[in-house]
Amino acid sequence: MSNYELYESTSKSTKRYLDMVFSLLRYFDNNETNIDDNDILPISFFLAGLKTDDFVKQTFNSFGITFEKCFDVLKNKNIPFEERSALETSEFTTYKLEDIYRTILDELKNDYYLEDKDIRYEDIEPYQLFDYMMTFYYEKICALIKKSNGIDDFMDSTEFFEYTTYREDKFAEFAKKYGIDIYEQANTESIKEYHTENFNIIFDDGKLYLFSNSGDKITIPTLNGENTSITLGRNTEIIKINDKLVTKRNFEELIEMLKDKNKIIKFTIYDINTRSEKTFAVIKEDMFGSEKMEDVTNKKFDMSETPNLDKYGENLTTLPYLKDPSVGRKQELERIMKILLYPERDKSVIITGVAGCGKTALVKGLAYRIQKGEVPEALKSIKIISIDTASMVAGTKYVGTLEEKMKHILDEASKDKNIIIFIDEIHQAISGGRAEGNDNTVAEILKPYLDYGKVRVIGATTEEEYTEHVESNTAFKTRFKKVAIKEPDYNTTYQILDDLIEVYNKISYSKLNVNFEERHIIIDWLINSTKPTFRDYKDRASNPRLVLDILKEAYAIAAFNESENVTIEHLIEALKNEDRLYESSRERQAQILRNLKPKPKTECKILEFKPRAN
Image (cartoon, rainbow, N blue to C red; front, top):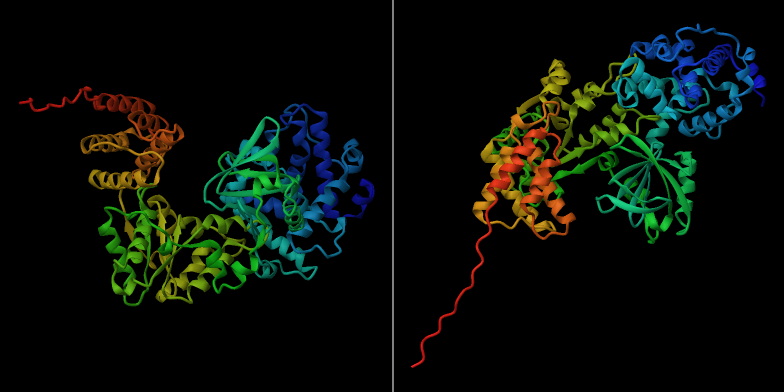
């Protein structure tokens, strides 16, 4: 189909949108502006939506993102912009519209369960062209929004989360015209899960994840020339397979490819640490192993009465613990247990404290005591299920919403009075999921479940987030009892380190083999090296997390160097690697430990005395 035929077949609103797209293409092509040639097409589609589409304009203007702001950072100040018909621009014959429409239509059908529906190019609406072009070229769009509005990473912002909620309603209306309820489809569609020798493969809500079987990072040999290997984290998101965005169709193609051990497959992953994409090619057997792949979809989820708790939760009361995770927190633990023993079970718990002070460790300490039977009789059958809010949010881009997933979890938890849900960073769940004209946020959904102990929750958050998201919501606040914890004092931190050295010596390749006096010197030095006055004011890290990270790093350095003993130099190197402390403090503390370093004993020979012969 030619550009002209496609243009003439579209609605009046789409013609207006395309007119703006090609007017912008003409302006950027013909004038010297602050935009790279490769960015012209996606940015033109993005700006055209901000200018002409009512839904896009209203939504983004509410975030302060306007056509004028975005265009102003790109335009040539000396040349005015002129809007004209797409047919009057030379660019109208340069860019092939059908290729763009075909790609978007394929993605639209796959994302919204419309594969077997007769949707034509002219049925695609302007906001859909805008949305998919923004998704395909998100890095370029994020860079523009950062320049114009100062939002550091729009796709990782609360504004984008809010936009996706509005957008789902629009796409849901579109799908209903073809007899599809996308929310019903999302809830009934089963998760696909396969196990291989190295990875568990999970396809969920249009996203593909790899979870390493060992729980550790895995280094895979690749076919990338100079880059002969790639290290994948414990949880890796695959966004492209053989240069195609992940869809239900090419996921099924991947499963077929994995049956051939010599098959070469190209993956593009999203690296959460660098916030960038990485592309690599691998041989199937090198990456996934030689064992036969097993489909565990039905086995894992369909037989369970609590599929959502199984999917997003982890039972802390069944985990193996090498030691008590909450040393020195007896008073706080007793406070939590008393709240959980209220007669009407009408109160949940929210733990507040600075980052790294041990909020999660406190909950694991309670789970540890339940496991050991060291709790009152009424709490011995309790199960603490930790909910992964990051995984819950991950699947909400195209189908379903955060609050819908939370409702399923609460429904399942309410059937068992012995279940207590633990939500770390609870403010993320409370503040998420508000749709246009709808106040049915996660917080509002939680309230009726919390009444009369239908579901009990332990949440953890910082004092600042508590003030902003919980304390300001009076009705929600009354359903929680606050337990504030502080950074542990010197004696508690000393005990934590002393206990952990014993544990690390048992489970690590390297050992900290020192006598009692030397061990005291090292622990005292570690605590003093992480005093609040030595910490970078821009980082909110605190103990015990900060000091434990240094100790763990020292063990890792020793193991990397294949040293059986953790030495003073390993401890000093670990300290110098800790950029949450001021550099001057690190240098000073390193010198202090060198001066405290016990001097080696003078080597001597032991003489053997024999009795004189008679």
